[in-house]
Length: 418
Image (cartoon, rainbow, N blue to C red; front, side):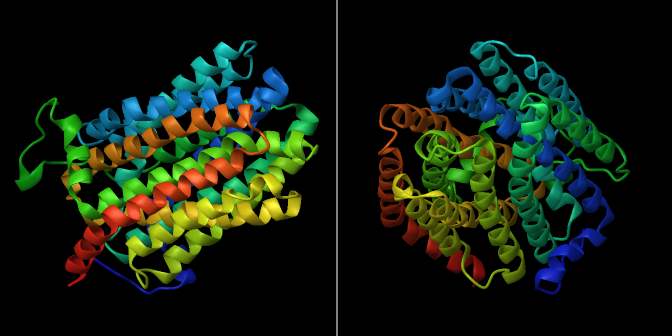
């Protein structure tokens, strides 16, 4: 694709949809994300159905199954994204996930929930890194790609706003389990949209124009090596650890805080989580509109500070203050995640982007693999103090990363811009 920065502003963010190939992929991702928004609420309600006030523990394990699948399989998915048809890989993953969702609607035991969550997200590990590696291939380097990432991120969070509220309302009338069926239908729509793309989405050749070679063990390590050798991506990955600790407390413990601590209903839980999504949506749109006016290392650090500080006082908050805190936390989440996607694209050659995106996806979720069970355990053990503990831990990690890694990252960023 040609190199182009293009005009800035919010209108330019939506203008990226004039790229017809990206537009179809974006619509497919939108359908997929709508399904995921419904699934997350359905799983949270299913955990509460099985365990009541101890739902945080069940949800923590279920989400641990999710990130374990990502960590184990995303590097392989990244390699395959550079070796085979990306269209086939994405469509196959979507249709197989649809089958798993239909099975989730009928689970009767907690162990079935755990097992199906692992399979569902093992398939997701093949879809998401492949999609992320495809976007730089179909958009112009620079402004168009940044706006594509911004729009995708904003849509993810907007559906996080609409999805929980809609799912909570639907659950009142048709039951939480029916959400799995609706989510399955969205994945079929996503698969059809990807099949309608006629352009090639694949990484054709290796560096220097060499033909693709067969899969080698070193392929699984290339992405990780590149991420950790680069001071900027190393800094960003470490701050994603901070964001994952704070985010795990939000995703695992909010349902109990709202339904037991505040004695409210499913719809209130959906509304509070919608506030989290609203903050992330606004942050994503701002990222695309403002472009590179702030150094990306600074944006990531501010995002990690925002989500950590928001979690700290949550145990003492009522419904409206909690929604305001989650609004700030949502903004912080995307100020960490979206700059990292653009940094990876800028600092990785096209023929390696599948592997590097796969490695980044795995590492960013490895942090959640530890954070989810920790949040669930402390949430069940100390429900009245858990958010204080989670916020304090996140802030301590942030201070350590800033003191040890920020100087090298900022120097590297200055050198790249010189």
